[in-house]
Every structure is written in structure tokens, then in C-alpha cells.
Image (cartoon, rainbow, N blue to C red; front, side, top):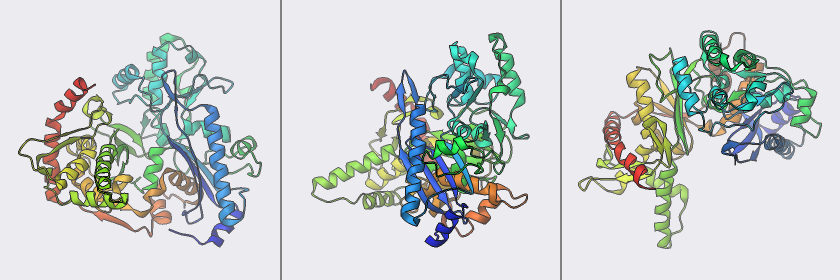
Length: 535
């Protein structure tokens, strides 16, 4: 992907560039794309959540200042590269980390500090609603936060006239419109796949369950409106333009696409919104998402059900731990080398050690590792203790040691995805891998292919991330042809010339991973004992 400076400059001056901004948990990122959908400029703002009165939050001041600084940095990048400012744009899209709880009164005032997805304070609500709906409601979902506030008899609940997510809040401030894209909405409350809207029968059950509290509102009245990718979601108001760009240079009237969540923008950025595809994001944490052909046979609390930005059902296995323990071991080898006076190139060290893993026994020679820095709900661990265990007769060498730690990085993910593939019989044609685990060419990719017995592709553009993904959704709204579905648009207008590498699963590696996972599952009581006795 690439574009010449002149074309980019002309696109910006003609007001045809498209902007995507995503609020991640540690960084707000803006990406500007040209008419060929390739990035031409970017800006960012680093931030951190605060822990206030037992709640993970970001203040409204931080949200507003972060957005403005991120946009300002983008404008500065455009001026530095092309010598022009930004007056207007073809379209804008906003996305953010999903879930959480932002509740407002009739005057648009925030009633309690924003409760982010990180808060695990809704266990009772999560359990009761899962039972009520016969549908898994994770703790981080917005409806779990609202219901927990009701159970806690919080004073503010009677005054709620609207509640939404961070992406929905930003969009509302800029357009005056209370909407969400269906992918983001699916992390607030379950979606009825047939209608592409919130599930009305579940809304009725919720209203019935909470009727005795005597609130003036019904759930349907306080939820945002659900839109599908490609639909118009309002225009930038004069106040919104001033809010985004206090300098006053940006003009009102720009079209906005439905605001989305980071899961949806990740699917778009990896071209995995089509049925029977999926993606695995593997960095500090790891999650796998698979686009389903039909609903699952039963409720699995190990799996979350959300949707793509165009409304297809997605099963998601989310794991808290992936590369942290691997990185810690690589740092031990770095210290070892430095104690001999060797200057270490970290890329070379990672590459060498990762490739060494490919020389190991298929089942890691009987070694066992758990990479839990924090808890893992899929295997029922509320805390983590990183562990390496072996029997005296296991084959303990460097290749097997690196291999077992790479396998362990995907152990919980495999446990979750096995429910989909083995219990539910879900079929997948290809998985797209992105994130730090795949940086060393071919290694993480072949190990993931072995773990899930599915071809794994890694694309050159996967590093562009969610801000690019939401920019593409904004572009889809203005560029799509009549009746063109999102996956068709992505294949035609974005990824047509994309060169990626695809690795097929090696049957011997698959058998080796299955042997490892059997040992891993049997050994979970060792991890449980470490949590119980190692304080």
C-alpha cells in the first residue's frame, strides 16, 4: 500500500480524505486515508485509565482533551507532510474499546464516572441475566453494569434517560445523534440477528424483572438506536466541529458512519468479517473471533457472542494472558547473554529463540507451562501464577522449552476455540493472525495453525489496527456500490492487491498440540494449588 504525496495532498484539499479515530485503552489513534483507502497521515495521544473509588475509569476531561490532542497531532502530521490544513472531510468514523457504562440524565449530564470494560464488579448481574436470557452476559457488558447498579440500589439509576458506550458518547457529542453500530451495540445488549436490532423479547424480560423498582424508564427508551455498517449516522454539527477542532478550521456538515467497537474494527482491518472466517489478535492478551454461519446449539459461558459491523453473529474467546510470560523468559536469555558481555539485538534474540521452537518435539517433549500473570475465566482461575513444570524424564532442552512456552501462550485460547470447533462443529476456512506473537515470520503462525487445525494467514497491513478499521467503515459508507456487502467492498476496494502469507496446519504439529493440551488440561490443579498456596 502506498500513495504519492501529490495525490494525497489533492485528496485532502478537495475534502475527500476520510478520518478514523479509535480510543484504545492506552492510546487514542487517528488515521487519515485517501480514496484508495490507504493511510496517508496519522496522529495519536497516549493516556491511561484511573482507579477511583474501586472503579477503572477515564474522566470526561481526559476523554475530551485526549480526542482534541489526537486530532491536533493528526493535523500537524498533515501540515508537515503536505503543507495543507484540514477544512472538511469525505467522512468520519469513531470507535473505542467496547462495553462499559456511561449513563446520562435528561440534561445530558454524566450521572456516575464512566465504568470501563476492565471493571469486574458485576458478577451477580452477569449470572442473573445469563439465566434470565439463556444467553451469556459477560461482566463487562453495559447491561450487566446497569443491572448491577439496580441490584446495588444506586441512587442514580432512577434518573437515567440514556446510556451508551465510549464510542457512542463521542459520536453523540459530535452529531447530537444517539446511535451505535451493531457490532458495538452487541457488547451492550444481545442482538437479534434476524432484525439486526436489540433482542426485543429479552428487553421485555428485563423490563418485567425490574418492574418492581418503579423506574420511570423502560429499557428500550434509554438504549441507543442500532445501525448497520454503511448506514448514515448523522453529520458533524457546528458544536461538534468546534469540539473536535477548537482551532475552528474544521467545517460542520461532514457525514459520520455508525460508531463501532474495537472488536469490529479489528475484524475490518484484518478482512475477517465474512462468514467462516475469523481473526486471532495475540499480544499481551489474546482473543479469537469466528464469524458463524448459524446460532450455537447451547449457551457456553466461555464464549461471548457479538456481531460483525454488518450484523453477522461472531463467537469470541477472550483470554487475559498471551505473550507476557514468553517475553519474561526471553529477557532472562538477554540477561544471560549480557552477563557474557554480548550486546543483544532483541529482534534477533526473539527470532532465534522462536525459530528454535520449530526444532522441538511435536508435543514439547513432555514439558508443561502456564503463562497466567492474571486470572483466566475460561479455565476457572481468578488469579494467575506463571508456572513451568516437568517430570524428571521429560526432554528438557532449549527447543522444547521455547516450544512449550509458545504453546502455553495459546493454551487457553485453544480451550475456548475447541468448544466451537469440536463441540459445536463450527466450520472455518481461514483465520487471520495479527499482533506481536506473529512478528517472527512463520513461527507464531504455524503454532496457531497447529492449535486450531485451520489455515492461518498474516497480512502486511495487519499492523494498521482499529483506527484504520473505523476509517474503512466510514469509507464504505461513501464508496460502496449498490447492494455491495461490507466483505465484498473490503475485497474489492481495500485488500485486492494484498500480499499475505498463508500457512496450512501440519498434521504432526496438530497431533502434538493435542497431546500438549491433554497434559495442560490434566495439570490445571497444579495451577490451582499455586494460586491457593503461593501468596
